[in-house]
Length: 392
Image 1 (cartoon, rainbow, N blue to C red):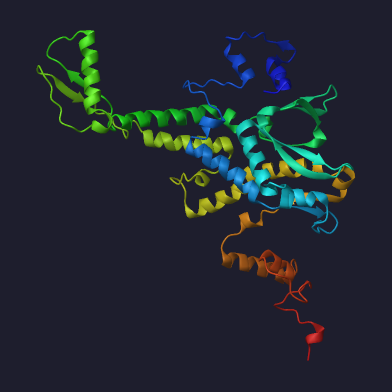
Image 2 (image 1 turned 45 degrees about the vertical axis):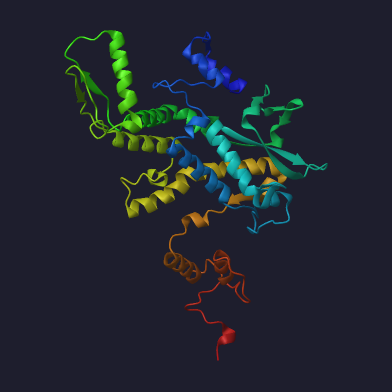
């Protein structure tokens, strides 16, 4: 945990709380957060929960797949010759594409709270490459005036980097959703472990062996061990032979009685809330319909992805553009594909844009990934307008 966060965690107003190493509140200083179930949650075991893996992959891969371009504020023309354009649209370095870097840094932010990449510059200060840094080796600190800087642990020792040379994308508050939702994730892990043990014992709860006479402790242990070895796990369902008038009474509690299935669904919904992802995007379709699933897809863009994309645009601009350049140009992620429905609806929308004079024919063709055509840059309504040179 960064040192300034440790100080803030220990400070409340003007009072400071003295913590001992045995105090549960001190565990947060070392990145350890206990849960009510006793399960310690971290990036590795959290990703073993299918809902967490789905949410993390969905957010990071979608953000990576969205193309980012650099535009002129005046005419909204793509500035493909600017050095930053290649880093945000094509490749971050020779071995990493721009999409892969966005995916990996977003993944780091989701799992660790923040993702970082170092800006490698030419001698004149022009940004040339972006190199991902291990999030566990980067510590954010700040000067007395509040200006941030970064301490980075390298093989050669510790290095100090300016905030201008570190592209940083962080989760809300710089805290991983896994940390914020550790109780829900721990409960999901506990359900998986409990149900796994249940099915390992034959898919049903344990039973009771009733004897006609009182057995001592050693005899009970030997009887239980013998029963488990001969009838537990894959050997369940075999014929049992009991001596001395013993009876086996299986317990009647079932998975349905305990509502395990419903509880597992509720954990998926809780994890969806932690990551702010619509449940249907995690394939929890118990309450999904055709209409609300389509609406949740739009919510995924507006509620889930938009804050991430805004953070990415600013992080790119801060590190790759000078203050004067930021006044004239801007970076934007293209989200048109996420809003595309079926072909008929898309054709209708393009037709309406053409008829109102909002798009030219070539702009429509560009949206369809088609090359421009001659004379296609004129804003006119093709359904009602007749050019003068076409009048006989």
